[in-house]
Image (cartoon, rainbow, N blue to C red; front, side):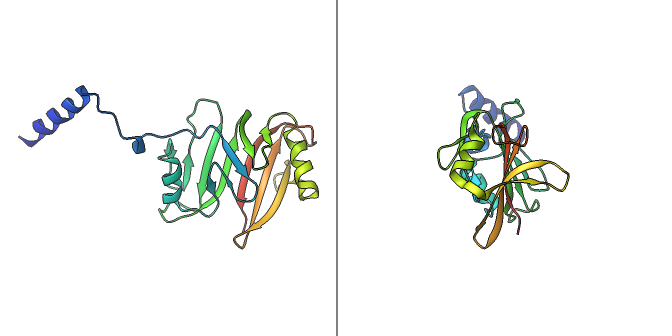
Amino acid sequence: MRRPLIALLALAALAAGAAPSEAARPRAVRNGVITVGFGAGGIEVGMKRAEVVSLLGRPFYENRNGYMQYMPDDGRGIFDVYRAGGGKGTRVRMISVVSSGRHFTLDEGIPIFEPGGLRAVKRSYGSRLRLVRTSDGELIYRIVTRAYGHVIDTDFTVTRPNLGARVMQVFVVKIS
């Protein structure tokens, strides 16, 4: 007797145009500010999962390892949050952003994914922006900062290792 009543109520809500709550729908993070040494899109390394969800809503995808995807798989970019494990109390350890055009800027207003973005970072950060070789041999540009007692790298993956190169991806990573 109870099941038909629940089904009838659900059908009535659907017919009345009731939609899922906003909190239940994933929201794409397609633009925002990247803050060197802190985070991106309002998310900072060190935040707990609940803080991320409070600011961005439910992710499009989340796994048991702490990965949270905030852009749909439509080829228009990436905004991923990586936590140090899958538990609810785990904290953000890395943020990854891929975009194009003027959708994401650095705090200084630099449209990082536009041509000339890396040169503008060099003008703003000077010798703090360094070309480094990663453990797998890739050449990237990096700014190392300290925040909240931790070392945080902001890495710029580029099409080629020179200041005229286009930035393809930005990582903000808590190192220690």
